[in-house]
Image (tube, rainbow, N blue to C red):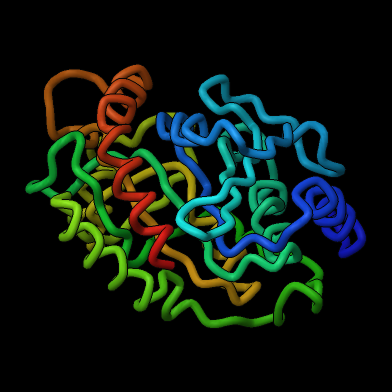
Length: 272
């Protein structure tokens, strides 16, 4: 269990390194971390240097934080995230999000690679997350509440901020990028879902599925942060194609679409 002094120590360390209050932060999902390399003047901090940050185990994540300037905005890019399937507690998965709150970040963009459930989606599409479904796994807000972070009970009606979604829609249109919309289903992993699970998620109204993002969004809602979520549809979910799903496929598709993603994300960040 972390207490307030742990979060404060992490925030103080990062704050001293970057020297300014960020306007927004972005959590970069699988295959999307290359975006951070477009800012050679960035202040870069390895997660392992930051007090109380866990040591990540996913080899496709850099586990670095980059403080960049973009169109007059100061943005923290988190290249790498923690996942429940790695063995971390939900509290550990959400730890960086709460630290961002203490740094003064009030707008958070979360991105991920997701499997497409909606039959009209194709690999390489981008989906604006309008809501999510999470069952069974514990909440990152479980346990003793830290009042400095947020209230014991909090609303999730607008976990994904309507104003930020409207900005994303408008920017995508201006950039000529098709931005689909839908509900993201969270599953704990690390195994990909069974065809029966995908049918169940489709019945529940999910358009895409993945193993991340939702714990961070819950923590952000607890802290009162505004969230924008975007998925890159990296594959069609189990049972929709004959061949098995592989992690290599996920990374290949997201990497191939990285250029379009970077263009869209930069344009959105400039308007936040």
